[in-house]
Length: 283
Image 1: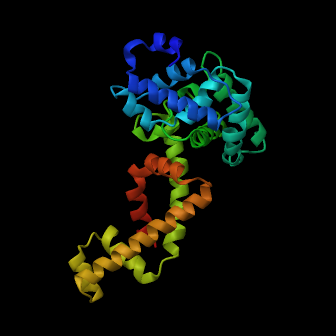
Image 2: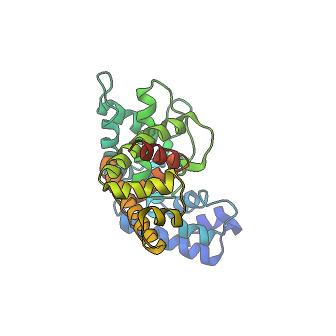
Image 3: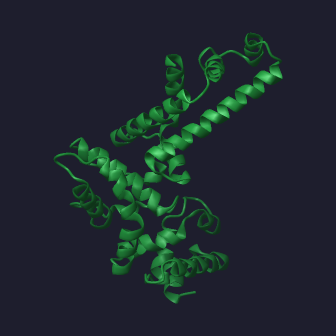
């Protein structure tokens, strides 16, 4: 273990913690072979982002340390780290920003704003990448930040530095979060409406009985003229079908992966039930 890191971290790490941290450092160097981040810097950077009151060894198991290595390199101004970040994370955010381009603001302008925000900072604000906590992959985190910046830019408001963007679903009062919830809520409604239209009429009826009329399975079975077990199986199949189709449509609309989709759904989940019932009532 690097003597400098041992001295800086003092008794915060046990032998097992140090061994795992060194292992994660070595693995990150394999992932980013051109990026040079000293073990001491990496160790301090990662330990500072561990969940509070959590044992170091357990916390390290939960963090995306490969991506934290790259983020650490960016904060150190390591040119090859910045090049890799541009290539692996920033370029993936361009498609998000293109949705917010207009006659007065094009995607290149928005990309430059995002790059400035993430890697340089604005005014007295530190670079936004410093707030990446390693909970979730870096590329998905950047895409969420990009949507946040795009929403704020198109509304002429100045975005504020907030908490880890992959943990935006915490429910705190924040006008920026409300804007993101509103944006993704609209995307969800469209995806759900498409999935709902793809159902057969009798399938929509089952969902309406269950979610809108709030009928129990025995009552639904009586209406359908089938055994309650048959009604339960039919309802389960319809719900699974609607769920899978909605997720597929939303993934296609937003061009996101499974991890990012779960972050988005957590962000809007508190309002999904109301949206679903309203759409079913109109169907």
